[in-house]
Amino acid sequence: MKRTIVLFSLILGAALLAACGSAGTPAASGDVVSGRQVSVPGGAYTDVSVAELQTMLQNKDFTFVNVHIPFAGDIPGTDLSIPFDEIEANLGQLPADKGAKIVLYCRSGGMSSIAAKKLVELGYTNVWNLDGGLNAWQNAGLPLEGK
Image 1 (cartoon, rainbow, N blue to C red):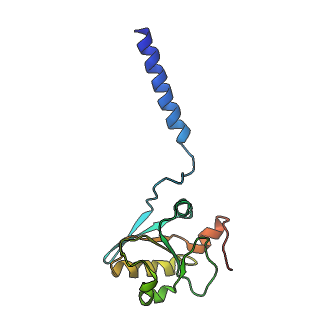
Image 2: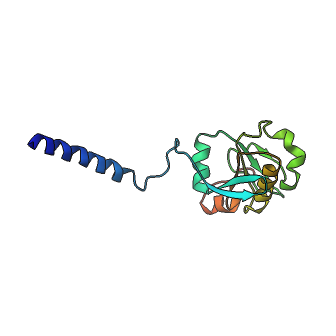
């Protein structure tokens, strides 16, 4: 009986330490980012924070598009620059698979929200948007390229 209580206490203690040890730790590179769904006509796109985007960039599996005009710099890892109001005319630069993940950003989030809405209307199903855009990125102390 005494051994059972000791064994139970050890197991319970280990479980509590494991649970407490993970609290407050930053997202690991394998973590799944869920973001915040934004409903628009035809479906939805996902807003992500700077911290979530940083996690996504650690294992980049998406096309990363700067849609801001005029050019104000790129977040490192940017694949394309397409003006937000020319997104439909430049679909040939985007993945042909409308289920492929596409992440958009602009200076503050307004232009990229418009481009995200347009892509959803055109049938794209895995569209993401950096909430707060370049401003949020820079306010977090993160660098830009080509500015």
